[in-house]
Image: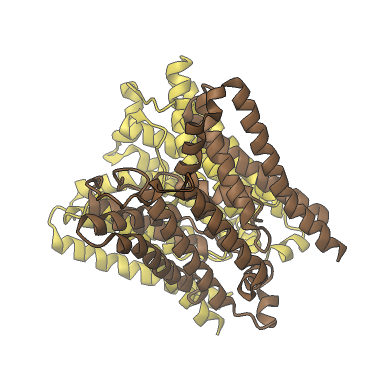
Length: 316
Length: 316
C-alpha cells in the first residue's frame, strides 16, 4: 500500500512539474497568456469537462467507463429548452426536470451495467447512440434561444470576482476528493477496481456502489449541461458530442489507471488544467480548434503509455 | 458437444431472424407505400450503404478478437479524401483506388501494435485515433469538398450484369471474409484470441500477432469502404460523417457478433447493415422524421446487447 502511494505521489509530482514547465513555456511564448483575465476565462471554459471528470474518475477507478456523458449532456440541454419554451414551464422547474432526466439516464446506465452485466464500454456506447438519438429526435434540429438574463449569471457572470460556475466546480471537486479519499464508499470504489470478485466476497455492496456512481455521472453531466446552456445561451442537439474524449483524457492524464483500482481526484484536476493550458497556449499561438483535438488524442495515448510503464516498474 | 451444436444454431438463429425481420420490413413498408419497393429506391438503399456493410466486416473481426474500434468512421473519411486528392492531383486512377487500402492497413496495423505490444486498451487507442484523424482532416482540408473528379474514377457507379458494383463488393467481401474466418488457421486464431486469450496463448497462438493482423485487415477493408464512399458521388465531402463508427459497430453487434468476443459471423453483420439501410429509408416512406434514426439505432443495439447477455446467462 505504501509503495502504491509512493507511485501515485510520483505520478502526480511528475504531472505537477510538467504543468509548471508548460505554464512557463506558454507564458514566454505569449504575454497575453499569464494574465488573470485569461486564466479565469480558461477556468470558465474548462468547467463543463471538469465537472464530468470528477464522477468519471470514480467510474474509471472501478474499472468501468462511461462513454455516454456527452450524449446525456446534449439530451439534458435539449430537454431544458423543450421544458422551458415548448411546455412553458418556469425556468427553475425546467432546470430541475432536466437534472432529473440526466440522473435517470445515468441510473439506466447503472442498471444495464449491474443488473444485466453488460460490459460498461458496450452499455454506454449503446446509450451514447440512444441518448444522442433522443436529443436529435426531440429537438428536430431546432435550437432554443432567448434565455432570461438572470440565467446567464451561472455561465457568464462572476461571484466575488471569480466565474460563478467555478464555485460550483470547486464544490463538486472538494466533494469528490472527500468521498473518494475519506469514506467507506471511496474505499469500496477502489476495492471494486482492484478485484471485483474479492470485493463481492468480502461483503462489499459492489452493485449498489456502481449503480450510485453511474447515476452520479448522469446527474453531473446534466449539471454540466445547465452550465453549458447558460454560458452559450442556446441549446442545440449536438452539444457535448465528443466531450467524453476530453473527460477521459483528463482523468487518464491525471494518473487514474484505465484498468481500475488506482487514481485520485487531485490528479484529475491537474490533468484537466494541463490539458486546458495546452489547448489555450496552442490557440494563442495560432493553432485552430480542430488542430488542438489532434494534440488531445496524442496526449491521451502518451498518458496511457507512461501510466503503463509506471505500473510495470511498480509491479517488478 | 451438444452445447456447441446449440451454440451454432444460436448464432445461425440471429442470421435467420435478421432475414425474417428484413423481409417483414420490406413487406410492411411496401404495402404502406409501394414506391418503397421501386427499383430506384432499392438500388439507392443498397448502393448508398454498401460501404457500411463492407466496413462492418472488418469491425466484426475486431470485435470477435475481443477489441473495439471507434475510429473507423474517421479513418474512412481521411482515406476517402486522400483518394480524391490523389486523383485530382493527376495521379493514375488505379493508385487512387489502391492507396486507401494500403494506407488503411498501415495506419491500423500501427494501432494494433499500440494495443497488442504497448497494452493500450483498444477503446483508448481508437478514441485517441478518432480525435487525431478527424481533427487532422478538418485542419488539413478546412472543410472544403473535393470536386472535379475525372471520368472513370467513380468505381461505385460501375455496373456488372446490371448490378451496381458496391453490391458486388458487399457480397464478394462477405463471402471472402466468411471463408477466411471459417476455414483458415487465422480465422480460428481470431476466435480463440477473442474467447480466451490465455488459452489461446497456451495453445501456441500468438495473441499479439493475431491482434495486429486483425487490425491491419480491418484497416484494408476500411480502405475499400472509403473508395466506395468516395466514388459514389461527383464530389467527396471532406468531413467525417458524424456517428459513422456507431452505425458500423451496431451492424456488427446486431449481426450477432458477441460483444464479449469469440462469437459471431460476418454474414450477420452484412444482413444487419442492410437492415439499417432499409430502416433509414423506410422512415422517409413512413413520413417519420429522419432525426429519429439515431434513436432507433440506439434502441436496436441496446436490445441486441441485452438479448445477447440474457442468452449467455441461460446457456452458461
